[in-house]
Amino acid sequence: MLRILLVRDAEVDVSDLPEKLSSSGVEVTVTDTIEGAAEADAVLIYTTPDRVSWWASCDIRVPFMYLLDLDENVVVTCPHGFPERPAGTEEIKACMDFIIRRLVLEEERYRELFENINTCVAVYEAVDDGEDFIFTDFNRAAEETERIKREDVLGKRVTEVFPGVEEFGLLDVLRRVYRTGNPEHYPLTQYQDERISGWRENFVYRLPSGEVVAVYEDRTKEKHLQEELEEKEKLYRTIFENTGAATTIVDEDTTIILANREFERLSGYSGDEIEGKKSWTEFVVDEDLERMTEYHKLRIRDPSLAPRRYTFRFQNRHGEVRHMHMIVDMIRVPRKA
Image (cartoon, rainbow, N blue to C red):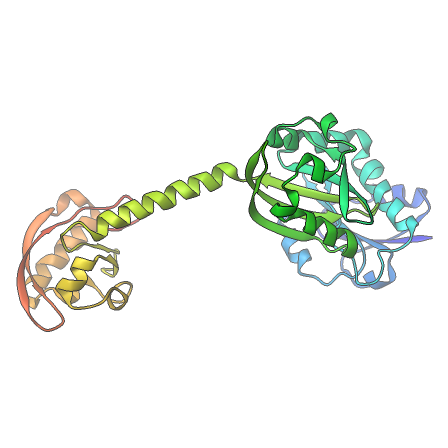
């Protein structure tokens, strides 16, 4: 008889689930810990989403999956890993499929969830001894992201539908996961072929049936936004460095966060010696410091209370004093001037 360890990790009622499993000829043990997991054929952890990261750090050496309690619905996640020993008999695989498709989600609810989640999901079956893969399922989010219909990919090789998949690096991930059973996160990488291109982040795992699943996000918009921000940062840094006037950005506590080359020249210190280490107060002569400090306090409280333009005496690392004209303004991030 198949042995299932049902771990209850939340104040939830699981009374009906053991009964359903037992009625199918499965031996179910309900517990609050994973002790005894080694004697079970499979582990089901009934938990809440915020506890998943904790369970993921546990060393569970049998096939397992989460039953996530989402208040109104219970959702089955993928198996999050398989042990070093073989995944088990066909009975385990059949039971896991039974749990996913019939007991918890039921076939209709499974399909509804699969179709309506925003995350892209592609399911593959290995061919050519795991060297290539054919599509066995492809959800609506994946259709929209890849601009291709499910009927145009089902039964076809991934290398045929996405000719850039090997260069992309995902094909090697699919091969490894299929052979080892160990899930892998494939970080943000650009996919490109003659038809489509974009940035994708994948999580790949193997089902008890032997099928390989890629759950992925289209991060193209975020990547383009990041690139735009980086370009703007380069532009602003260029302006900052080449303005011709000594310029700094300081924190509320008077620490100098950034200093341009002209300020380095004027102060006699390098950027590494200044940024994050020195206070602007160190460059003000004692006779002007009290007035400058009061201006700073007023500006932090309300920029309109302190003057934007004034003169003071600046002292560099060699003790040389220069009369300076200062212009101050607040940056619209927390307490930066």
